[in-house]
Image (tube, rainbow, N blue to C red; front, side, top):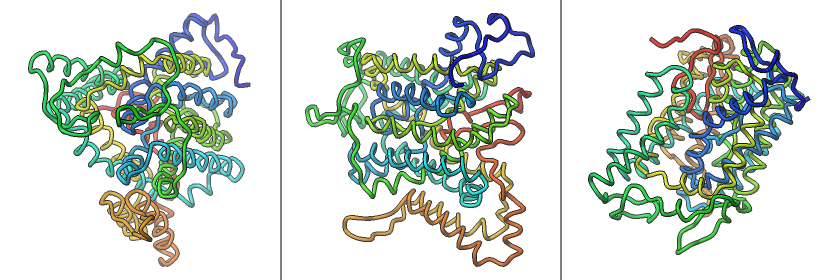
Length: 493
């Protein structure tokens, strides 16, 4: 059952070797505390990514809680996980907006991607995961994750970093230091701490140096302005639903809205589904290892549930969702895998989503702060593609692996496009993914038998985002700033 937990021991004390199973719980007081810890773990990334996608962070937090509850019900409480905002869509959303796409078209494309992910999960549930690995072997999955991440470099260089280069530099350095120098939970919330640091340093710079003349995202041009502006926070009410999307003084105020659908936007977003499949597979494997249980029968359900969460969230204008490795890290540290704590975290997130004051505070994050954080996160999304290759033993001495994905990556990162008509053009991430997947299977079809055998022998099985020796990864890039192996020794050097 997804609900109805057994009390672990007396619910208050845990021995050094005690493990709280998903269908168990501690006392409600301790469970609420653990739930709050899960909220902190997912918090930074869950509202950073809506900001960089131009979506409403208050709505994103609320819908992440609702999506998490749906996920836990669909997997029957067997896979404890939190569904936060996915970064896998950021590059595609940037491309859609660069082509003049609307916010409604962005969420419509995300909804379709969620539906496709849900259908893939259903197929895996009934056909088994072997079909998935044949269609999307590690060499292809790694290439798609890489081009999604590196395609975002112009967004950092052209939008966020120029808003305040010195604040961006300091925030970047802070993120790196706190992710690497500290162990355990502190390193896992490095992004969240960097946001707080960025707010403080921006406020201090305003007091010490006054206004800055730079690109102002709110105005859409270079202006002289303060780095921090809390007027919207003081004006916002404590309780209420997120606003409706509307135009105010010629500027779009994003909130809840009905999605609309564009074929061009949908094609740009669909490659993110590949990254989410790899990500979810990795997370299920990590949880299975930590709980010492066989979760293979629930892999399809977990992927489908992630898709359902994205469909529900985007249907009202919210952000795409995905399982969060940050929260898996919390479980690894506490050895408490109770889904009761996740239900508590989901309820807390929904309550945050009912506070416009919270939404206004998140929306007031200075652009320089986002520049310092995204320069790390976006690069890491790309490097996670290389991690997939490394940990699956992909052999680039084999031209089957080397040649087709090389073309796909350069097309995706370089913004190469194919123009079919005045109204339809395919390029960037979408075209790069099509080339990487299609050209790989074409290469296999025409290659000699010995090359195919070499490809199958090296990197033929998908371990996904680093599920070797108990490690776990996140296509969102946040958790892989650094992670210890669950239950294992610290492997930093």
